[in-house]
Length: 392
Image (cartoon, rainbow, N blue to C red):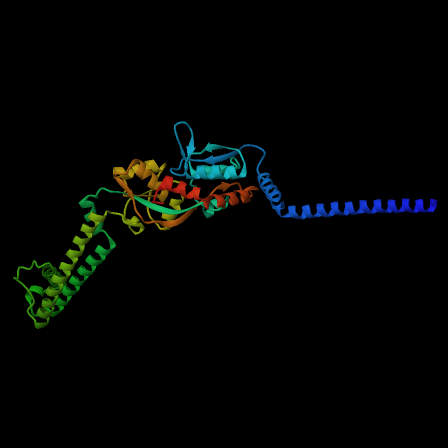
């Protein structure tokens, strides 16, 4: 009996141990399943860690952001509040990156570039054109706005006498006039060759004979001949007939071309595109990327300290065209000179605006990613339309 009791007791102990093992196995299986189910959601903590890592590239302080007044990209009101395309873009980027900043104003783009190169600013944003020269001293973000140079012109017609002078000093006019004079001289010389031994009017010495022949050729060309002298030989008279007919047609065409050119200029104005700039008085913003283009094209220009000063000179008639970044021209003309100045539809010398940063900036990558996300957002399109409308 005692043996049976001991056997039963051992059996109970074995059953209890087996039950514990089963419970532990079930718990292990459940925990493994829960861990596997949670594994797809592990991307969220990883993303948070990535954002935190990107934000850690920024200094542990308030960023100093350089800017300058460049309507409609950066504007400051009377209360010192900044608005504009570039300002709103940076505010959106800063919000994405979770960084604090304050704006510091400079007088010119070159001052911004120099200050960024000296690391006075953590970055600079306004309407800063990306150029090779600037890239040598600072780094740029991805471009956020593609544009080009534009031309502002006066809507008032230029003086008719100025149009006449410009037309008569143009290369085409001088070329045509030179050809006509050259033909007249050739005809006069041939008349002298044919007539010098048979006609006293063209005889005598070479100087006297050639002078008389050329004078007669000029009279025949302009239909001013009095008829008291003329060629007598058959060859001379044949040449005279041909020259009179040709000169009538040539003078008529020449006169019609000049009249058409003057009329067209009066209707369309002095400047209709970049091809007209070499022959007019051009203004540009001193120290801007526009200067490089004008100098490369050998276009003479007058530099101005500000866009307002340049447009004022254009409005006063001191210059015929003002060349600068087209969106900035559009804004300033529409705000101040909508009735007297206009910006041509033409765009040339493509340019791009970017955010300037010191060379080797650690946070350039983070800014690029946030910038690209921002400019592909619907909010960016609304910002551009708000400030530039359809003319962008």
